[in-house]
Image 1 (spheres, rainbow, N blue to C red):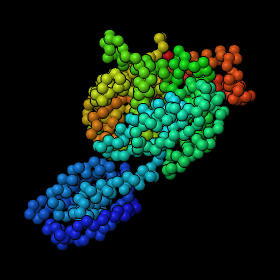
Image 2: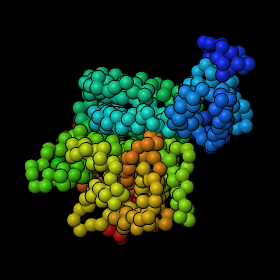
Image 3: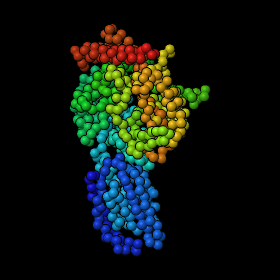
Length: 555
């Protein structure tokens, strides 16, 4: 039995004063309402009697949820204006409406007050997903990602509130980045905490970020409070770069601490790899050490290569330029594309299936299940680096709103074009892949689904399609029941990382054998540096060998 909410309503008028309500009870000022989870299925039966002169009784019965009922409030407001004489509302065969309150406030007002109370209680006890945004790159991507999430969670036509309640921890060792984010961010529906780590930075040095623990306990205390804010926790997303000092070194230390203190919690990291042309003198060392640490302590590494994303966005600009001068691709473009790739993974889904030619729509949206993503994409523990792509075209190219409403054939073309280019003479092969189609309404998608999905299997080179190619279809793009948006997003664990790992290992090993820059690391890590390098070389070499062994014969 659901618990009861004692909802109080002040008496404003006397019901008997109105001719249509003669003989009805005076207001009791208290109404017992059931407090239920937002996604609980409700058997709602509303029986309405209009004034006798109209002689028009009306009954509404439906299976609904708290939020789908909320979406019908506008329809019920019309009944308020029609002079309703008596109303009976039952929840799972239990009568719960006092007619006097309906007279005083209208059915739409009473139900809305109840729904708001249920929402408040839900949000207080809902599971949270913690999003750690570390360093300049992580903060910039996080800002773009939460711009998308907030737009989708605050829509007036949302069928349900945010199923995953995100808590943001914004961390940097230089104040200018997080303060700029703080100034530019609008009022967020998601809890955001900015953690001050001073102004010194970490000098693009993994060792400085990892071993300088002057603010570590403050960070972990903030994380503990976020983790304990709810009875359950949906896991942690960590956004960072692997080339600098804060995102790489401090990010690695925080990942280690989270794993040690919360060993059963799912930890997914999304790591931005530097341009191969060079960003810092230490980027090969930093990348090696960060990936080695994340491979040891995280459950999934979302590998986001700047080279690959730059190629994707440049192709988008090239397609619309038609020979004219191509606009310069900016870091905001790259971050926007990454944010949409991540949003395609973490936004809630409302499942729809086609069974024997009949479409079956699931009523309840589902939040991201991080452990399911890990299980689907990392069947081999030594191979846990996944790549993301989306049909999204960045806003600098054109009207992104129009792009979201393209047909499925156009979205498929966009997604295939947005996949990273492979080195000449090689073919992409995948251990596992997950395709997410959003906005699947009506038969259009299903008429071509078999051919449609087979093209992706071929393009991705999935080694074992029957076991490790999963298609998720959602009737809603996110939460807005009237949104025309559509998108295709893919997350796959494949051979894209092999050339990147090969190059990184070769360059880092050459520098290490020459003893280049090692004293910069020994300044902070002392004698431990040699052991850390040795461990990370072994971890990344083992991962690269595993990818080559599983996929090498297929390349």
